[in-house]
Length: 119
Image 1: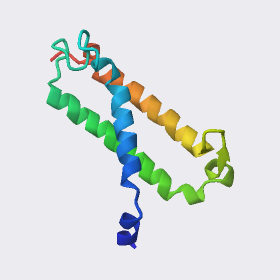
Image 2: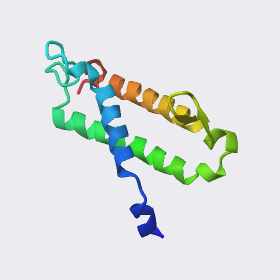
Image 3: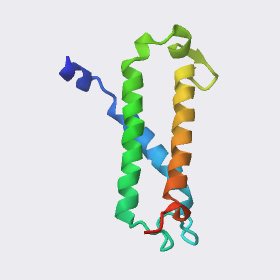
Image 4: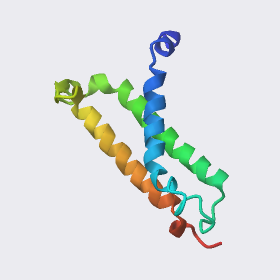
């Protein structure tokens, strides 16, 4: 059973979601004239920052896996896909996107230089 789940598991979807999530979190770091998260004003080292980001990313993946496992128990109107013009979309997809955006906004706030605690 577990081998069958891994065989049919779509790794590419998770890699793309992780890449897009990371791009959203670190979007202000790309203009080289004003980095904030990886600046010298931030008291966290780049390694600490990346470890915290990987923790948030792991949380996002965990929620996605748990949600996928329990999708059969949700009402049909939440998980059934509706044609929205660009492609099929479900209420669950929209809720996951909103949750990921809120998680990314919270992570940006946590990683910003002004939120480090004095030691």
